[in-house]
Length: 135
Image 1 (cartoon, rainbow, N blue to C red):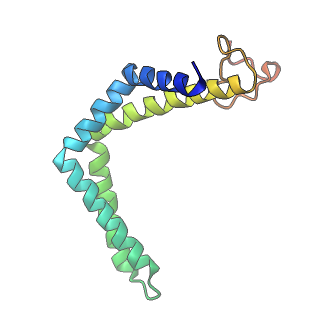
Image 2: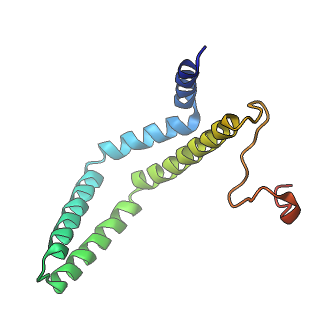
Image 3: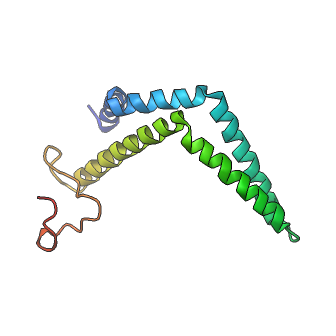
């Protein structure tokens, strides 16, 4: 098996993982939530209007304040949507898994033992003499 074939096998394993399944389900629910999609479209239109106004030489600050307020209100509604909450959580778990996988691959590319190498925790400088927080 070459590296590309092994990578494709890893891709299959990722798609069989519970984190991926939860992510795919949450994404599908987001896509099917018409109210959420409407709000996302609204926020994109507000963003474009704001950018258009901000790029003018004689920008209307009061109009920009109104757009900013509308943006924040809709953004809060989006982030409080149950489907978006589930998606955000599932996405964070997927990103963490993918980061962990990437760190293991990087260690292997540096010559570490693929069977035993372990990425350092966030913020770890690698010197246990100055920390000891891993144990």
